[in-house]
Amino acid sequence: MAVPSHRHRPSLLLLAPALLVGAGMLLPLVYLVARALEADAATLADIVFRERNFRLLTNTLALTACVLFVTTVIALPLAWLVVRSDLGHKKLHAILGVLPLAVPGYVMAYALMGLSGYYGFANVMFGVSLPRPEGLVGSTIALSLYTFPYLFLNLRAALLGLDPSLEETARSLGRTPLQTFRAVVLPHMTPAMLSGWLVIGLYVLGDFGVIALMRFEVFSYAIFTQYSGAFDRVYAAWLSLMLMGVTLTFIMIDARLRGRRYARIGKGAARPASPIPLGRFRPLAWAFLALVYTCSLGLPLVVLVFWMVQAGPGLDLIEVAEAFYRTTMAAVPAALTAIVLAVPVVYLTVRFPSAGTGLLDRLVYLGYAVPPLAFALSMAFFALQAVPFLYQSLPLLIFAYAMTFLALAVGPVRSRLLQIGPRFEEAARSLGHGALSSFMLTTFPLLRRSMVSGALLVFIMVVKELPITFLLAPIGYSTLATSVFSRTSEGMMMEAAPYALMIVLFSSLFVGLILRHEGTR
Image (cartoon, rainbow, N blue to C red; front, side):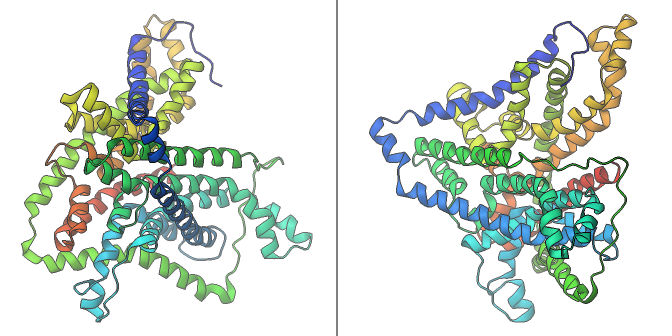
């Protein structure tokens, strides 16, 4: 645990942002509970025990389980091939394994829909009319092709850190390669696998775009239809609480399963593992890689280009530029707000550890753990009653973005501040500088790169964000994400293509940031 560097109390410059973050995370959720409890006992029993709720829960859990299974089938062999086999061009394969993150789930759903139908790519180019993907199968494919890189990154890092002498010892005791993998490699990969599963599971629980386009009714879609249609907003509040309960259950299960830790206890550094020859399985490995890259990268790019060509000169590029401008006008201030709040919050939690700052540190991650649709709904409910002039305004949208993705800004800043330590500021204070000037002269210059990284992470996530924008954006304020979704849901594939392509180009910045961070660690 960090030790306070000096005995003076934190200043108002630290406490004010901390109180704002705490209120931003707690107040809307408290209001959501209050709104849900407005129902009388009879109505409450009817809401909670509706048969539809069980169907929503079943569909939500089934979709999550299917996506986790498919992503594991893709990411586990991909990570092993890239790290442990004698496959060539491993750096290229590592990049190709991460690049699907540049294609958001709803853009992947757009690509699958653009492939099918009478006017779709498959029928126009090859004379094969594919059925429209929908339901559990369509949602699983679209979400899996977008989210498997999260698991791939974790598994690849675990394999790179695994000491090969452990496997050699198992082999020397007579274990077969398969037995060695199950007894030695797989247990050491379990923490990384759980981390990847948690990230993917939280994303699936909070997704709205894919399941809406695929017409698969889960909690998030039911919440949106109840709220946007003004059918029963008390029921919408209860659905949000149920979805949050499922999310917190996932987090608690993950915490329980992380009990065991695997660490090397010998002295010295582990040597690199010798590549394992693929032998006669090499053609099968290349076929697997070709299938993964074709489905996750080739499919969306080919379909996007196809519909762009179909549109021809009829594309309204001015409208695309305006959507790009509106997206930037929301993403830039959201990223700046997140980083401005992140620095004092991180400084307070690191330099002044206590029960209160520990609670604040956990609250920061609450906004990221809560499904975006539920968080946006709580913000909307709270604004309608407490600050109605902010309802469906750009400042409320920016604040919701900043709260939701604050954890992404906190992560790089926190890691860097822990590395810096308090000694530079203590030296400056011994020379007569105050707390603020000591920080600005010594620590702040060392934090700037981490601050830029955190801000870029928030910026790119805001560019791709869909459910928060739908619920909180001002009337008529369409972004790239909402433009893709609204046109795709109406079957306007040509009109949606340029917006989807712009999102992919923007999202590639996020992928580049991941690769750059990995290469300079």
